[in-house]
Length: 274
Picture: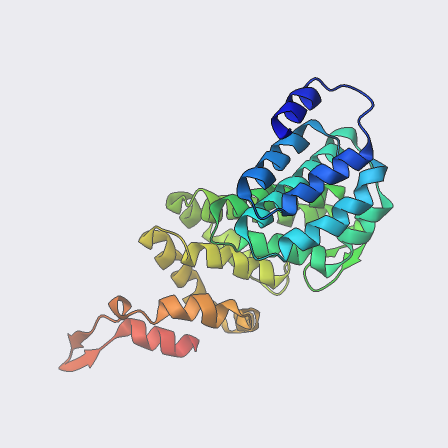
């Protein structure tokens, strides 16, 4: 049935009811991965920005995000991304979307995905973040996002830098580019940044979770070189769950004999940070 429906929808015939679209969206929650994945592909033919679907989609996305199942979460991010892509391409505005953009939960779901160990989740959420920022046309101030129309140029410029840095560290893991952008990373981790500190923690966490040891060491060096006035930003769950877990691994603690004394420079540096 789903294969036949895929062929039908690919022809972009008219007269397809919103009820059928809702049913396809509901199939995203099915435990059978083959069915939910097929439903995701079906939705590529549909316009998720139509008013009849919009409220339903925003009831569904939190369910998928909170499911704890990576396939369901992926389906949710894909649905969300298609929704925003439709809005962006048609230059639409929506009271429902504006309401969502003001809520911390909206940005928390994005932040969770960007800090995910699943590479595809990070890619989806970076795109969702970019499109969401493009849609900002109202003042927003919650625990995850600050946006003020009067300071829009400066805020958007900082977010542009953040997205570029996240792509370097969290998507491409390009060490040479990350090294060249070290000053920009330190600036984003500043209390004066318009980008709230939890996003900087997510950026660093992707480096610590990366597959390349050189990138993990780079992230560790960023953390340990933090100035005293910026230390409060590390009051985050990632400090113990990600950063320090890597920081206390044995290979870092090299002991050298200097002036007849055994000294571990790394240990002293870590002690000073703590």
